[in-house]
Length: 229
Image (cartoon, rainbow, N blue to C red; front, side, top):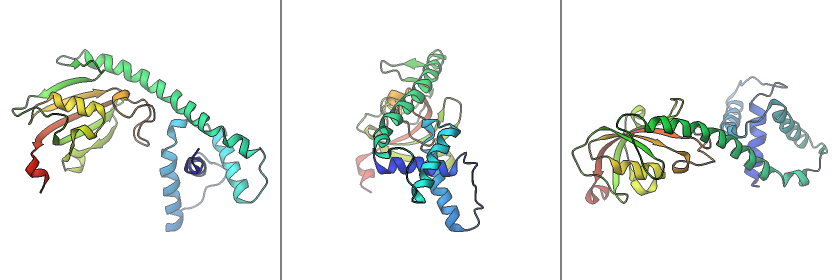
């Protein structure tokens, strides 16, 4: 298990649900350390730690920082960290996948929706007039991505700027789905986790096992001469 993973646990313990001691964030140094801890803590959400488990991590951190003798054989239990993390993440992802399967089934029944062999569900919202892209093409798009609860996790629309990328260098659901719409058109993609970010997700915004919903407007297929500019 990488040392960084152990540090992640320590940070989340310090900043989340720790009722033993909270400090006033009265200067930039403290605010910076809080921000580091909060960022790391967000990445641990898939573990679903209980208050008691967080307290145990906090105890270990404080004892080590104070130079106290550990209450357990740390070397022995350090070897169990990877298995524990893996089990917790997989359990959380399975629950998320089940909800996603139900959502996909409903989405596939919508008028105009189609489901591919891979499990992708798509629906053309606006017919384009140009060519359909190939996986090897570079495309310029506007998009908005949501979790199945409607929460937006990413949006070029909110940023006010379209994005350009090679279609074969994104998640599988995008590579397959954007090829289903013509240039100038708009498509809705409901992407199962296996075609998105899988069991691990993309913390902190996308949990493991998450089914994702995108609305993508294909602005144009970028020509070779444009890419050189």
